[in-house]
Length: 103
Image (cartoon, rainbow, N blue to C red):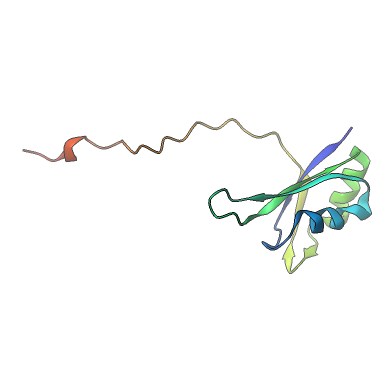
């Protein structure tokens, strides 16, 4: 069964292909994705790699966690499920209405 890994501390110029190549020596890489900022389209400096087995994932963690990659130190560990977050309300609010001043 595939195991998903979190990879932090990536140089912002890293591509999906470079990330996949970095993990390939540990075993079969099923997918490698850099997370991009929706607004700017630039890398957020982290991504996820899916290894084909638990053993290969553990080997990748041992090989790459704390190692230098493009001048930055990688953080590699087992990915946790995404936490449920409350929806953001971008309408503002929270004020006193009508300026909130006194008469």
